[in-house]
Length: 436
Ligand SMILES: *Cc1c(COP(=O)(O)O)cnc(C)c1O
Image 1 (spheres, rainbow, N blue to C red):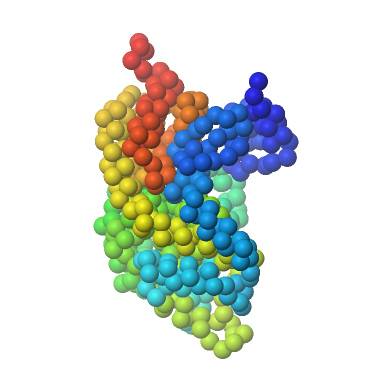
Image 2: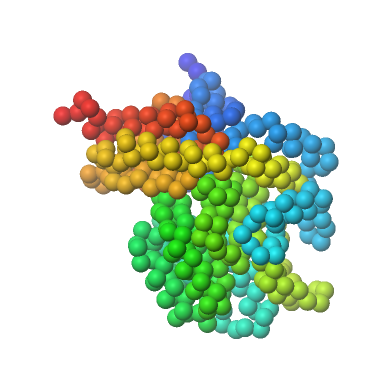
């Protein structure tokens, strides 16, 4: 007998897992990780799993990347953390200079935090205060999209749409103007009309460029996104692009906003920023936004906001090296090639399978929407569990199976993922070759 059960029991006794019902956690065959290497996680009994969800969308180059490990140890010798409040740190300056050269924001300034949700909170507060500082009144509302997800803190939860069991928090959410979900082909024309009609109340529009991840990989056209940016510009409303999920190569370009040739006023970064190594996020403000906060020392124009671990030096060192490696390894070319390959395989083997309603893919963000014939069959969960049994770590969003492999995934691994997925789908949906 392996050590799995004992570790799970110890885990369930003291750890509280997010988005997880703890009374059934131990019975749901969780993978209890001993270590992670390359594209795999290895459990306490030595079983290997291909990490096809990039440890919930954060891992870009894989685990234990020698160059990133080195960057981390080098920085460790120079101190793990010093405060960014009123003081600076060399490695954070270097990271910001490197990011400034590549982010789709004009004259960018970087305010760091630790999680994606905090980057969103910062963007919302900056957008609100931007208008106050400029002496414009009444600009205190936000426009978000149906199906949007921006994180789990109260502000991020407010601009996000409901779902995932979060409706219980509705009384805490502030009201937001809501355009339709990306699945509605008219969502952008409608959003643009709303921007025009409500411009004088709107502080900002917030959008996930090209892919609504948590909505189950709902895709938007670059042209639709560009029309939204144009409406914001025309009506003088700030545009916040939440690239926490799409940033750092996930969609085939370094940032998804590039594919629509848009330059948001505020950009939120997280997840892949440190290659999945350490918690770091950033709110990127355009020069015109930043300038609205300049004024006399101690004046009301200052942004009174900051987090203890803002600009953590270890995270900054890894993030800086990560940016260099994305170039050195030509990671974006691999994302595009593997994405094309994955699309071909999914078209061939998955799209037409009974039980599959839709397949959506952009770059290496994929969603396989299952179509269970009745409520409560939990196909998403069961297909992923069947894949985990076969050594491929997957996790669903409802009945959408998410495919989010590391950006350095190989052709062989893409084949392994699709092969495992088809077996898992057939097992659960019972439409396999030998089914009646
Ligand atoms: C994951 C995610 C967030 C929240 O990031 P956390 O680090 O989990 O707080 C925000 N926006 C988008 C688009 C995300 O995918």
